[in-house]
Length: 210
Image: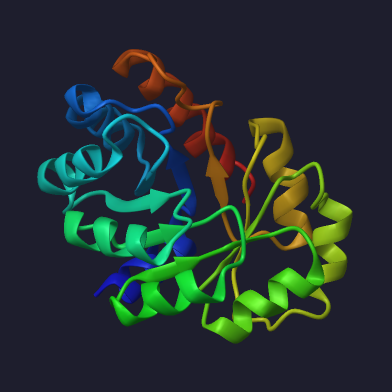
C-alpha cells in the first residue's frame, strides 16, 4: 500500500513538505492547509517538539489524503517509535545501513540522505527506496546530472535543503524525481494561511514546468 501510494505521489506531484518545528496542537490545521494546496506528502523531523505525537495526529486526521513520514531519523530505536506512530516514510540526513534495514523490516519506505556517490550507493545497497540529495549546496544540479548517469534508473533522487521555487526547474532538468521543501513552505510558528499560500505556489510552479 505504502509503495503504490509513494509511486503515485512521485508520478503526479512529488513535493514533500518538511514540517520542522511543528507542534502537536497545530498539526491538524497545518496538515489541512497542505492538503488544500495540493500537497500529497509531509514529514515531521524528529527534532521537532513532540514529533511522534504530531506524526500520529497528522496520520489520524489526514492519513487518507496525506502520506505522513518522519524526518531526521537517526537510530534503529527511532524507526520503531515512528513506525508505532503510523509513519509510512522514514527520511534521514545520512546513510545508515542499520536504519535503512530497520525501516525495511518495519515495512516502511526508506529515504536516506547522501552527498557523495559512495553514500548514494551504500544507501542503495542497504535497500533504500529513494535517495535524499542533501544538502543542495553539495549536490548541485550539475552534480545530480552526473550522478544520474551512474545511479540505477529506478532509484528516485530527491533534492532537499534550500529548495526554492526558482531551483526546482533546474533540478528537474537534471533528473530530480521530486523535492523536499522545508522553510520555503513551513517554519516554526507559521500559520495555516501562510502555509497554504506558499505550498500552493510550489504546486503551481511544479505543474507549470510541464
